[in-house]
Length: 63
Image (cartoon, rainbow, N blue to C red; front, side, top):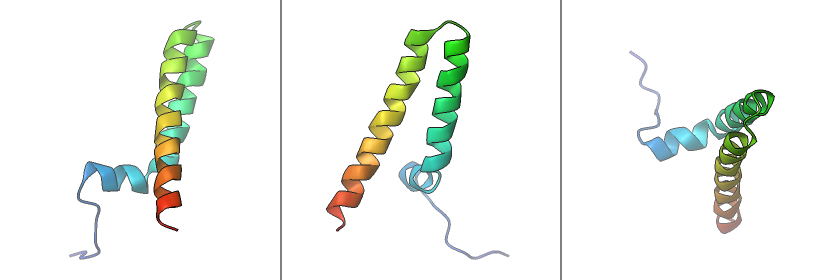
């Protein structure tokens, strides 16, 4: 049985996979632009910006 520590909360999982999440949000935004849905694309890019900014603040506080 694998006893390595695993993320237990949504926040821990989101932190672990943040790069993948940001990539997926941008890929979704690009697809939405191709579908002529710029408002929806902007929504997903806004989520990505908020996540990236929060991570930046978090890193700034840990120094």
